[in-house]
Every structure is written in structure tokens, then in C-alpha cells.
Length: 349
Image (cartoon, rainbow, N blue to C red):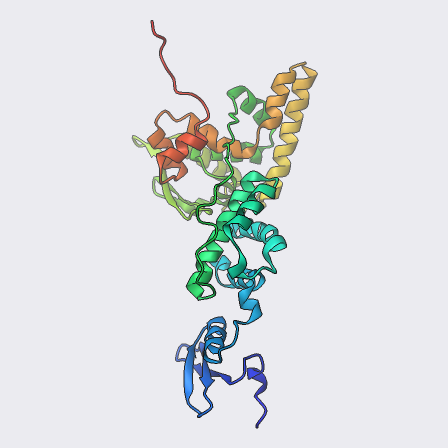
């Protein structure tokens, strides 16, 4: 028997790889199984599925790395994660580290709903456990599509931990205390976050070339949702339009087109924003303590930059308008998670 070519030595017995160069320049790769009679059977173009079909033809067990969660996690990272938004990828990687520590060596067909429930109950971070189980559920469904299991998804019907949305509301006094200690670029970031109602990462990504006529164009990094936020009303610049005009004027000596720049013209990163935020909040808190305003100091200490988005949502009278600005598909999400002050009501008399 002739020895196999080096490029085929990673394949199961009697399986061969064929390559063809297409007109586009891309290389097409297909896998074929050769029967004892010499007949070739196509196994498709997916390496893992080809190995599964080989196992069926040879009446062999599925390859071990395609039966255990470790191999399935690896394929999910290779084929699915790159298609997700950067922030989602970062979150999923963190979730996979937790899942891998428990499920790596488990065969996919051996995982039961009881095991998922036990995982949920043992995790001290209850909200993170919900996110991890949701990711595991998607991995199971994807594995079913890949043909790696025929079992029902064991995550279905598993009770989630009860989540309590963050309900901190930054009052105007807290806002003013931190704002007074902020450097110019942090003040602009705070104003831009409040007037647009967008997430910190989206605020830092905003640029001058996002302006289209009377609109600021926004594409949310987390959801991919597109928004057009008005810069003029009745022919006059509104608060957002005036803010952007001031930022463009301040940054005109710099090359970068981003709105939020430091004094040297460098785009402010999330880490730079966090450092500036921590410094301003700490100074504001210490001043409150020095003034013997202990409770007020505690309120300042709880204020996070991400609380600016719900502050904006809470201070827009119409829930529908707030939901539209935040880019939510359902007003219920805005009402339940982001509206952190009660409705204005009139007294009975």
C-alpha cells in the first residue's frame, strides 16, 4: 500500500482531501471516502462533518473531540464567535472560560438538565450564571445543526436565577458634583452620552463624519442597531447640535475626526475614560466627605458612567421617545430596566 500524502495524514483512514482553485482565486477543499471497491463518496466540504460521515460509513464511534464539549467549544469559537459583535465576543469568551472548567471533558450526549441546574445553583454570580447557560444553550442548538448530537437541548426549560436590574439613579446634584471635577474631554463625553443616550463604547466611537445633514448617524456596537439623532429642530441647532459644534471647534487643530479627544488630540479609549471618571468621582466624593455630607458622598461613590444612559432615559417624558433614542425594539425593556425614577403625578387635591 502506498503511504498517504503528508497533507492527508490528519484524516481518518480511506478519507482524502481534494483541492481546486476557483476563478476568484479561493481554494475549494472537499473530502472524499474511498470504499474497498475503489468507489469515492463525497463527504462534503466541512472537515468535522466529513469525519462524522466517515464514522457512520465505517461503523465507528464519532471522533472523541467531536463528542466532548471541549471540541465543540473550540469549533464554536472558530466558526460562530467571529461573526458576533466585539463586545459580545468578549463576554462570550469570559462565559466560555467558566463553562469549560466544568463541561470540557463531558460528552455532549451525557449532559442532562439536572447537570445544568446544578451548575446554575453552584455559581455564586447568579446573573452571570444566566448568561453562561444562555450561551451553552446556543452552543447545544448549534451542535445539533452540525449533526454532533441528536439529543434535545438540556438547557431548555431550566429555571433562570431571578435578576434584579440596577436601579441607581444619578440625581442632578450627583451629576453636578462629578461634572465639576471632570477634565474637558470627560465633560464632553458625559454630555454626549446624556444627549444621545448611547453606551460608553458607542459614545467614544462617534466621529465628525457620522454627521449627515441634520442628523448624527449612530450604529450601536452591541446590537448593530442604526439610529439618526436630530441635530436641528425648527431650523435651529438643538442641545446636541450645539455640543457637537463646540467639540468640532475645540478639536479643529487635531487630525483625528473623533469627538472625544484628549488635550493632545489622541482619541480617548475606554480605559482612559475610566481613569478620568474614577479621578473625578473620587475628588467629588472626598469633597462631600470634607463637607460632612456622608450620605451624599455614598451616592457619588455609586455613580458609574454607564448610569448616564438610564439617566437620559428616565428624564425623557415619553417612554416611546426614550425607547427610540436608546435603540430598544420593545418599550418594556426601557420601562423595566432604564426608567429609574417614578412618573410625575398630581396630588389628589
